[in-house]
Every structure is written in C-alpha cells, then in structure tokens.
Image (cartoon, rainbow, N blue to C red; front, side, top):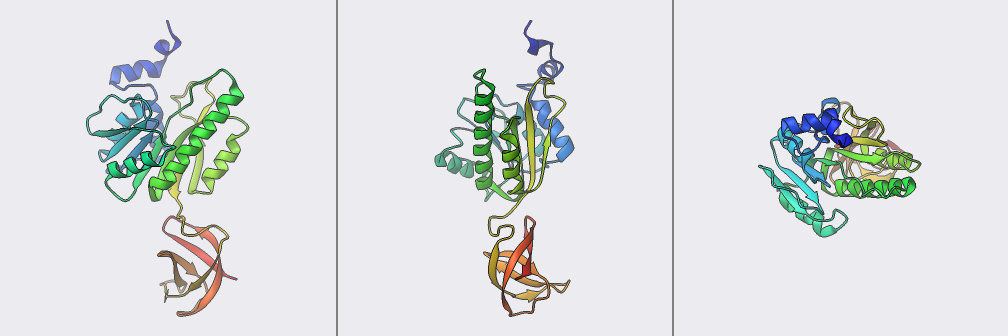
Length: 253
C-alpha cells in the first residue's frame, strides 16, 4: 500500500472531501497566523489540484482565484486561471479576476517536480518561491498577507531575509500536517510594506500639517510620514527609520 494511503491527513482529506492532504496545512497556518479573514480576496499560486482553494473559499467566502500551469477541476465560487506566474500576462489576468485594486492574501503551496538531486531541487524551490513573492508584491494591497512553501537548505536564509524586507512581520512555520521527514517549511509574511518609501531611505519633504501627538505630517507619493520636532510648512531632509503598512516615521537629517 502506498505510504500516502496510510497517512492520517491523507485519510482525513478523503473523508472530509478535500482534494489533498495539504488542505490541513493551510488550516493550521490560518489557525496560528489568521492570514485569511472573512470577506478577503485570496489568490492561490500553483493551486492544482485545489485543496488550498477549497479551504481558502471556506475561510474567506469572498473572491478566491487559483492559478496554475496545470488544469484545475472547477470549484464552486472559485475562479481559475491557467497560466505561468512568471509572465506579465498572467498577472494581468489575476488583476482582472480579483475585481478590485489589490488582493488581501496571496498563498502558494507549489513545489517543483523533484529530480532526486537535493541541491537542484532546493534551488528550484527557492526560484519558484521567489517568483511567488514577486507576484505577491504586484497584486497585494498594503498590509496584505503572504504564505509560501519553501524547501529548506543553504539558500533559505537569503530568501527569508528577502521576505523580511517586504513584510512587517515574518515567521517560518512547519504545520503538523507536513510529513515529519519533509524538508518543506512555510514562510508567513504579514503587513506588506509600501513601495513608496524604503527603510533608511533619504527624502526631501514638506511638512503639511501637525498631528495630534505633535509630530509633523509629510507625504511621499500620498504615503504619510511622521516627523518629530517639525513645523508646518517646513521643508527638510529626512531618513526613514520605521515603516508600517500605512505610514512611516522619519528623522530629520
């Protein structure tokens, strides 16, 4: 008998009508990190056969879109796109489907076809996860969430640091539903940071107003930056020291 058929989560998925045991990985990720909330728009990259799509639809009840180069059997209330996430035309199709400016959540449980050479498979996993991350940056709203599967190895720390530069909160997590012998791990990113400003970036701003706490308020491409000890109408050079999804703090240089 194949190992999968003796697997607890394989049996549980079959009993509960999920297309793969991976459905329970997303459930466990969401139980811990609450990345998908009611009404969220969710995009699942590398979604075949659809186990994560089923769970995403249950959790959100809102717009859910699945993308894969493989065919995905229809799921009620879920839109599917057959396409390669590395291509701009696929990104455009996603934007058309989500019917809003940006998605709330992007998830990805995709993995490369295994070759048997661990170094090669690890590198391909990092490459695939990086494409998923870049796709997420293009379609997520500020403050949005991201979850992606990665194979552990020597390239993993660099990938984790890349995610940390983009999201305010980042953590690696191994769900109980992952097999014990598996090298997979999930990287969870919450609070997507804006592209309007960069950490430690230097900018010339004009203080447009004074906030309730007494900090000066400036805007960079309509993104709010608070500056301590600044006066309304003052033009000054600042350096960004802290970024949140919808505002940042800067210090006078």
